Image 1 (spheres, rainbow, N blue to C red):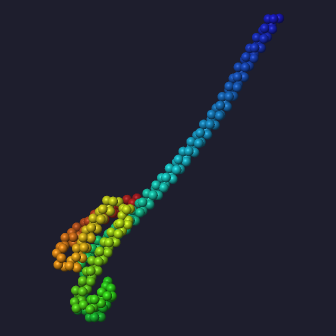
Image 2 (cartoon, helix red, strand yellow):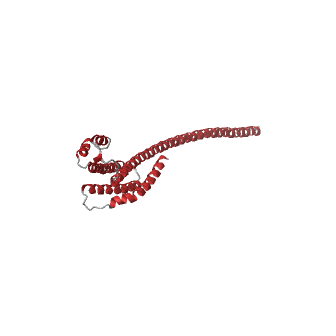
Image 3 (cartoon, rainbow, N blue to C red):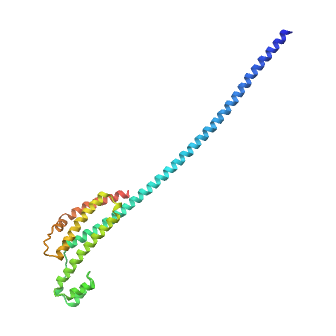
Length: 240
């Protein structure tokens, strides 16, 4: 009997031990599955947070790039407009200064015209009414007409040069420095020729010479073409 009791007790202990191991294994397995789900949940949340953060950073970068692109586009437009306006004004100054320097005019012999024909001619000219009266009342009408036209062209060149200089001061900040420098050099050539022409008109015996005028006539076209090429290239760059 004692032997059987001890055998039963031993069997019970073994059964309990085996059951404990099975239960523990079940618990471990359940805990591991739960842990995996918990880990996956945290991992997915971190990934989602990271994606959201990256998306925000990408959107911010896109906005900055768009803003930078807009600024670049506006800068290109500003330079294109400024350089185009300066070039147009320079061309006007160049042509008017050349006209003032060459001072070539073709018109009829006003001293030989009948008063009615002279009046008609003067009305179709560029002269103002006071200037027309000056010609009509002059003893030598050809000389008076030539003198008035010379002064008008000289003053016209001076006004055009002034306007170009003013435009460069106002809008030169938008233009590439090297190009602006070339325009300024060309404008100095025109300004010197205009001043020289004005001095000869006002003081024919001043002895100032014709260096600036001669330089404009000999080198002006070359300078004009070189500057035109530089400006054209830059304007094309701003369009692309």
